Image 1: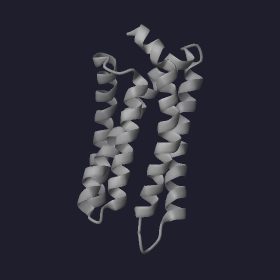
Image 2: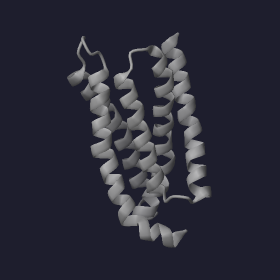
Image 3: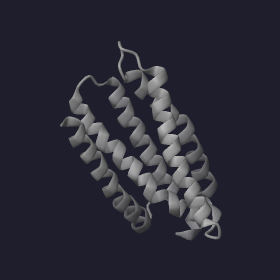
Image 4: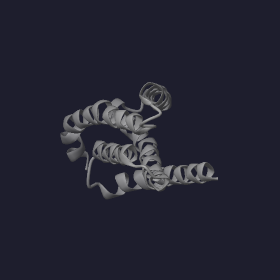
Length: 158
């Protein structure tokens, strides 16, 4: 029952985030879109850090929706970012590639970290710590670079 409830909550927050994140990014114009992606990655890394340090199931119901919200937000922000960065001439190819990389990357990272870092003594804490490091290195650093490179373009567009 707990797994079903958690899955429902994570799915609902992911769906809500697809709507809210896209709407906030387009309407508020406080930050360029890469800035919102950076916020999502930092929030997701914080949730995985909390999960790696927690010992109770209660924290799953705190961190799970946070991770679902951030993952859904990526789905809302990446298609417009692809258009901003690559233009709309090849959008179907770029969008399909983006969908594939998000899904395959999430599957590979989660299965690889769980199979490599899981131990009976520490359970999933090392795996969640590894995911946090991967998020910060492979996720945050490229988006910081994109944010800095596109800052002038976005300031002129807004």
